[in-house]
Picture 1: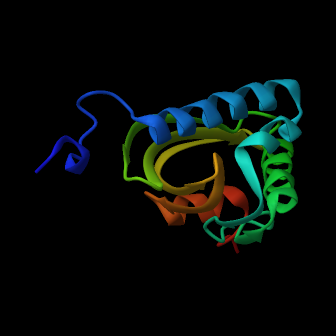
Picture 2: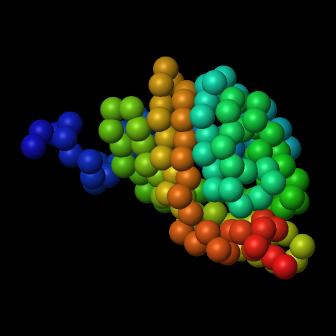
Length: 148
């Protein structure tokens, strides 16, 4: 195995890991400013984005405007409390998987969890994204689905 075949994060994040961490830092700053449009430079105009289908603002999203609208709606639903941070990354030449810790509050309820986010990065932008939550049942209850 050569150094380029090593998928471990022992030496710290590589270029795609640093890119995804910068994206999440920018997302936090954009949330504080109430301006998800600040994320445009990170997301390809024709992005394919697959969120778990747990709320009206999630599911399969096509295009940067749809993704930015989803982020706006999530922040509005949670009063700006929806926060995410990268805890670890592993990457290949075109993809990066990130373990994300997140939390949010809504209607006096707090939820926290983890998810695996997988990004395809092309030409310095997110071209595709897939999210795999640790506990989909809690997500559904929090975001308003699965309740009687």
